[in-house]
Image (cartoon, rainbow, N blue to C red; front, top):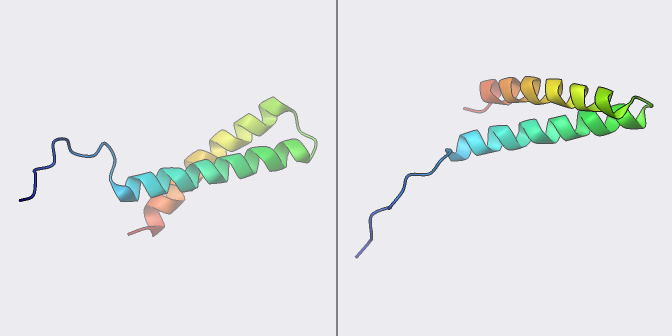
Amino acid sequence: MSQPNPEPSLLSQRAAVVFLLGVLAAVAAAVLTVLAGGALADGLLAGGGAFVAGVLFFHTIIA
C-alpha cells in the first residue's frame, strides 16, 4: 500500500538543475575574475551577472 506524498516538493527537478547550473556559472566567473587580478568585489559582481545570465540561458535550453 503506497502512502500519499505528505508535502509537495518546493522546487521541481528542472528548476533545481537550472539554479544549480546558474550557481556553477557564477562561481566560475567569480573565481576567474579574481584570479585574473580583479578585486573580490569585482568577482562578486561578475558572479552575480553570470548567475542571472546562466539561469536565463539554461531555463531557455532545458526543456
